[in-house]
Image 1 (cartoon, rainbow over the protein chains, first blue to last red):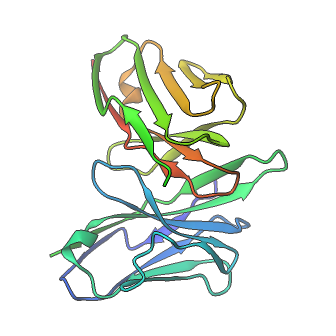
Image 2: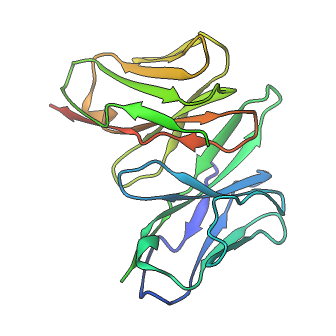
Image 3: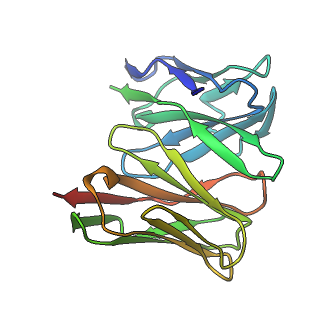
Length: 116
Length: 111
């Protein structure tokens, strides 16, 4: 069964450093999402792509976060500079809308970030 | 903005007991989805409810969407240790809009 791939799985960095996360969605999925999940909370959407275009980045802290999906396939999320409060799980998801209009999001394993 | 609230935050049950988690949205939803996240894992899609008053069953799991399309519930009959995890509801105000997740209900099952 096809899966969403993410790397790295774990990242430890010091505050003020730059970090980058990579996501490869399920083949053929046009919509890609980046979520942040703080321990004990539900995922919070950071950015949504439709192919290579940003559909929703209203919750993305644009002073330090950036995301791109240049060819409409894989995607990179960057944080520069990282702050202590950025410690969280960063989840990537992709989805496909069926002919019946149902959309299912498939999540990757996530990147767990710890900022020291 | 839209808020999705879930209760309870935690639930501890003995194996064989039933479990219910409730989800309430501050706005009317186009659809509601439920996800399960095992400890250390990632959210896994369980089901999507679209119609007012809809009830769907998956083996021991029963999902309901309220008549006003603002609330939902997940009921597990006769819990098993494999049901352990956090159950999230997530709502969309319109099809294709952002999915807003609740805080989740963390279920532990004592054997």
